[in-house]
Length: 227
Picture (cartoon, rainbow, N blue to C red):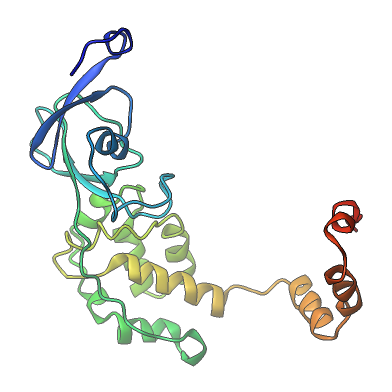
C-alpha cells in the first residue's frame, strides 16, 4: 500500500474476506470493503439500504467463536473480522393464488406443512439481522393469529438467513410472506374511502380530466395547477 498524505491520515483495519486478509479503511461497510479490495460483486447486492436482503453475510469478529449473520451493507468492518457473502440458499417457494384460497389459516398447512414441526429452538430468531422474533411469528401463524404474526414479520427483508439454521426445515420468511398476504387479503378491513374512489374511477369520473392531461404539452404540464 503506497504511503501518501491521505493514507497517513486514514485509520486502517485488517479484515479477512473469503479467507484472504486485506487492509481497508475504518468505518466502511462490508460491501464497501469488498469494493475497496477489488471484488466485483454481480450477485448478492441490491439496495444498499438494508431493505432488499440481497447481501446476506456470514461473519466472525476477532476473539469470538460465534458465527454470526447480517447484511453486508449495514455491518461495519472491525479489526480482525472475517466475513463472506453467503451463497443463495434453496428456499421452498410454494405456488399459490390468494384469490383461489378459501381458508387461509388452514391452507397454511397445505403450503407449509413443516410449519407445525417447529422445535422452538429459536435459531431463526438468532439468525435474523432485522431482530425479528421469528420463532414467535411462526407459532402465531400456526395457531391462527395472522394479525400478530404479520406484524412480527413486517420488517422482514427476505434475506433467507433464517432458513438454513432451521432444524425443521421451515422457510420462515416464506411463511411470513404468506401470512402478511393473507392478513391483507382476508382479515384487514378495507377503508371505505378506497372503495368509494375505486367506484368513481371505474365509473369514468376522471376520464375527461385524464384525456385533457394526456393532450398537454411539456410546457403546459409544467404550469398545470395541481388540484
